[in-house]
Length: 89
Image (cartoon, rainbow, N blue to C red; front, side, top):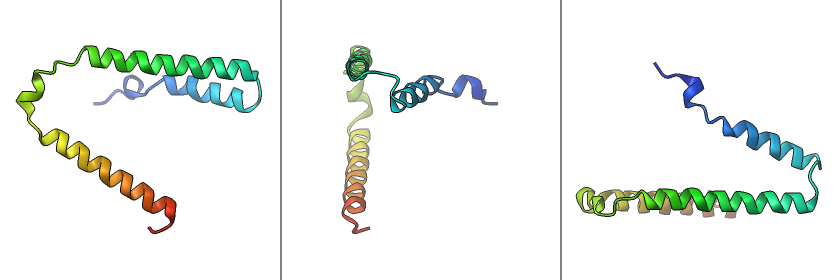
């Protein structure tokens, strides 16, 4: 059985609380800018951590199929987005 409390991303509460406080004007423009800079830095730090733990030799074992599937999925999402934005879909 799946434990919902363990599976739920609790950081979302903090995200929505901060977004709400920002919308209500509790943060100055300088504070908002600082939070944006901090957020970008933390995303960069997380992506660097993922990259540093990647074993590139394992890509030879799985082959090109996952890359092709990901590329096809990205193309489908991009085309669908463009069609929805332009009103053609």
